[in-house]
Length: 536
Image (cartoon, rainbow, N blue to C red; front, top):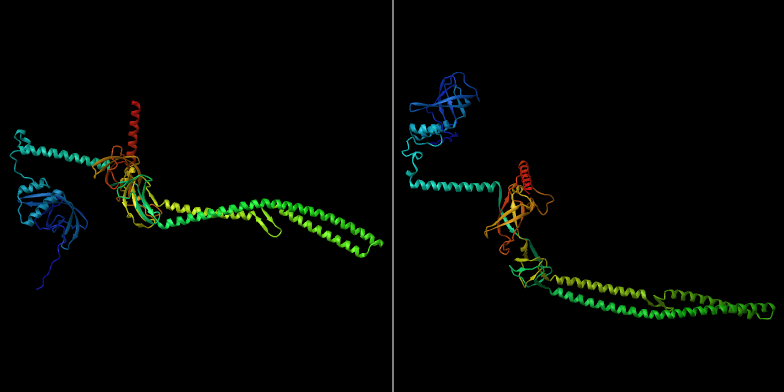
């Protein structure tokens, strides 16, 4: 046995073959083979068959218990058959006709026979059926004293409920049209993170979560034995460099004193050389006279030639000694010119003040370098004192006390309590409706407090910026990427109970982005200012 399953029907409406007549505009009528809420099939169409997509104006007659219910419809031809029949789709079906046909089809499917009253009610009121039985006690004709207590109570209840509903609706309308309510807000405060300046052991002073600190107050110390050893070594080198400088300066002072004595010696030597030069000049003159005399005597035959030669040798020796004396005088004059800085003992320079000053300068530079290194180490030692950068409260600790911590590791976070504000996250559409210096109402649900504030910063794109971005990026209009900072008015509040991180709900006054509304608002503001000026 083979089971054949028919495919499910793809029709949107149930199709029935109940009697239904169609009347044309010229009074002719035809029979409907089957029909539904979507259309109908006509078999005996009078006259030439219509074409596809033709619009037909029809009057439908639905027979029911001896009377016809008629209504006008419009249909479009969607299918033609070989036997002259065609199918039409309703293009204009009145709501009452649709409800009546729906009611008729449902009753046929269920096998139920509806009454005339129910059908008439559906013809008159197509949405809700009503009863045709008259009310024995109509409320509009009943005096107030005959109303029941239950009716009075329910009337009062409905009146109060209606007032409450209308009031709530008015509040919602005001809140959504005239104001902007933002629940994505939080109390914020500037946070300062402290890190280890050098590696070492933390010695706590004020090192507890919730501890209040003042600016510049000592929080902890850092023990670093290696740094202390470097400081002691640097101090020792500074002492050695200072001693070396002192010895070099003392040596320079001694050399200067010796130089003054050497200057006297140089002056004396110079004078001696002058005297020797004069003596050698006289000696050369005497040798020249003796040579000329011996030459005259030898020419006359009174002196031997050997004596003439001896006189010549004396002349030449005197001349050579004179030249040597001149050179010594030139050397003495040159040494006298530099006698304030150097002294030469005819063999070596026994004193050179330039070299001595160079040694002093070298020693002074060494001392300066040692002092600079010591100062740098002392600054690192100063960094071993951790102080509070601002006045606030310690809200987080990241390093345990009395433990070794590496350099640049985070230690704690301090919250600056005197600069509390509220950060609200708005969508790209909402941020267009607020302005700088506008007032705002802030509600803190955790404390149940209502505060006032003022908008001090609006940043539409801060939450969308990336660290490696080189231009602004656009976000969707519904995402809350716009950041608004609100300065709180804490004049009559206790700031200690308001902490950063508390949730907040902010109400902003909505501004209009319409140019026409803006002009009207500015005009009203100008007129109001003019009236105030006239009153003054």
